Length: 470
Image (cartoon, rainbow, N blue to C red):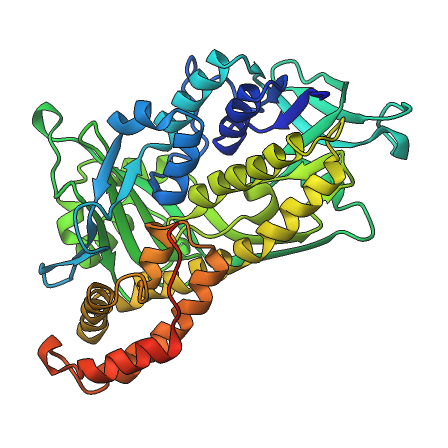
């Protein structure tokens, strides 16, 4: 079977992982990345947020044979540790036991590991080559060379500023939420693009390591300072530091616009995050050195142009970070795409029908990416406003107790998303049913022993079906 060269735009995280798996299947792969090689040059573009890698991402990394090498840069987190303004700490476990964790991983460390693995697999990577767009050569779009078939990709060398055109057979746009490949596709009259920007932004900060590289706080937890309309979170790194993210509205007296001086930043932290401030000796310098980022949900259609160009990862469906699923969703894209590719390669056909492959990928994946986009937006409100509420915490205890009593039948929504590979759309649908069930069982209650477990059994067996193993 013919194995055309696959050209991938974007070497962030999804691009290299897909490239590794394609090389393992015998496809020549060329990867273009706008940034310099981060293994040789320090790259600072406001994209160092820690990642929460969980079941879907781990499965994709295992399938590519690289997860075992990444364990040393991951720290398992068993739950959320809430820092209240009173100084009280409240721990809320994510799952039933030590096996149900999410893993804090440095984005940069993961990116470097995947680049190394991609090159070792034979992927050709060109750095400082910004993709400006691509198009079917036969369309004759202005600015592109005319050819009989295939794709023309437009690149700009970020050092010299010179532009060039290259020919390609199959192009996959894994170039992120501001995708140039998607931008070119949006010229088509049938293309639909919806971008929903939050009126909140984020700022990356750091809690430095203690003496000898020690951690200043609990390491096996995601730390949250929930303050109603805003919050601070922190994830541990293996070097003793914590990657922190401050989420604030852009405007208002408690927004980024108001924090326009070092003294105001320090005073804001002193009033709202005093225990974090005590661990951040260079807060003001750190704050103004990093840009204020925006958060956007991207929904578009279609994800492909016939059998020539495909969008994948954030380029097709960027989501906000509040369920920790952005990278897991992108990596699961790779899993889904590769399963369909493998089926096409063993079908007995002389060549792959790329248009059918891309269409099948989109139709199978899009309902799930729509679901996780909605779930991520919902989880923002939960993390910011509700995680310190006593009744909310009680319902989470009942949630876990129901799972223990009805294994495989009742699985908490968070567990379905983070600890299983249950389709996101199924998790969303069952989650809504279980939320109503919890509201009914927990109304007026505040102790587990007061729950009517016979009623719980009736509701669970009436409203839920057994979940398959995945």
